[in-house]
Image (cartoon, rainbow, N blue to C red; front, top):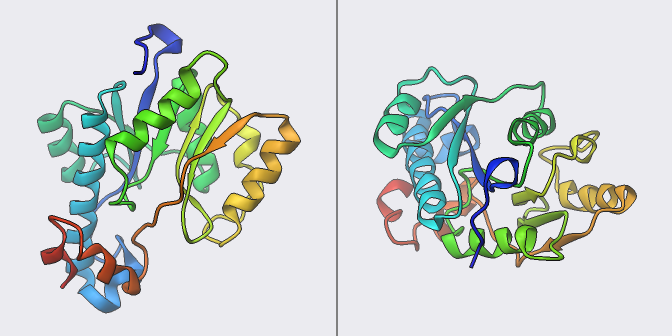
Length: 215
């Protein structure tokens, strides 16, 4: 069980979400779903990720929105789900993640909206890795494609996100090298898969509540 904490030591969950705008969301799925279909799937995945974060019940949840927080989807979710809302800032994914960790200052789990296999239990285990006595400096859930679907830090580590080839299959490998170079202690949970390419849709369709979104 994760122990409740206060102030800067209280764990929070950041959910990185791109606005479900047709033509700008899930662009690699557009050949299979069309622009509008890809945007609808993005909306469904985002709602799922927020639900997972809230059901984990381990700390406050904040949407970090891209390209900004003005899309009506973000405002609607903020009203109905009672979550925080902030705009992502930074030139690349690394800078945007570093900014979210800097804003929290204390322990934070950061997830995206592309991993429907992620469940509240995964977040609870990740939180324990950070917060238990003798806990790690960092925790990750690697992705099957070479990236990661969750990163958690006890304290901000901005250099961890610098000079990483985001979007490549070597993100987790490069991150391990950076962690070792910084002298950080980290844990890795079992790998999960995310939804990024048309070939991922067949597996997504096997999950409850997603079959109708994959056509």
